[in-house]
Length: 270
Image (cartoon, rainbow, N blue to C red; front, side, top):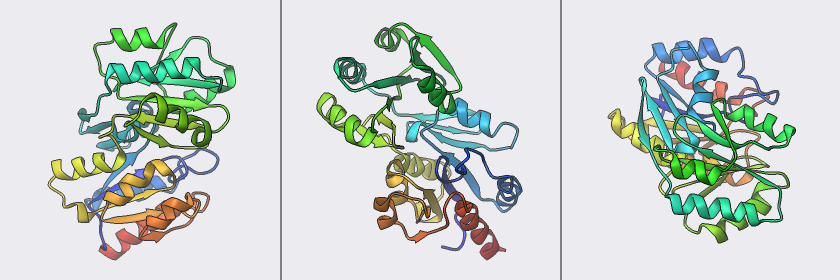
């Protein structure tokens, strides 16, 4: 494929550089892509409000947020994948009873609930990904009383998300989609919510053949979208399991490898 019509572009470890910034050269490249009819869809475990803030005023029409549980296109939420209240309760109960230091974030489509009492350094990490927050005394009560659906429960595991978070969730809520998005973050969604399903749904809604899509990512929560996309690109700094399923490997995020891939597609189309 020389020109993907939709590019699902992961954020952390992919577009965002090691200092946490979107490279300056992304913005003119985005303009070129839009002029060429390529839809760039930032695709992230971050909440919708955070993505909208990061790209405010840049003319982006599409976001895949909450690891695929929320899809936004042209001013409105077009798809959500809600979790059952029983599942949310089981997860929060297991976290509360665990001896591991874990801090949950309960995500609604447009905001997230966090605990009022949270260590400052954990709060700072949470602030990076959740711009729209509501601090509450009881996360379970918040989930029960909110009229909006819970789309994701994200856990910040102080030790290691893959080693200590995944086994806990496998026992407490078997069958959910638990995606390790970084060393400390574990994102839990309904079993039908993932970045790949969101990309597929988006392509269908825009009448784009899935073969004419691409996905660029670096971590395990990007697996489904690389598997779904017509062209799968892994970053040079990607998890080894992701590299194993990629069609190609680009440079690292420090080398702006994602931009190199997009630039190559645009030049081939020109």
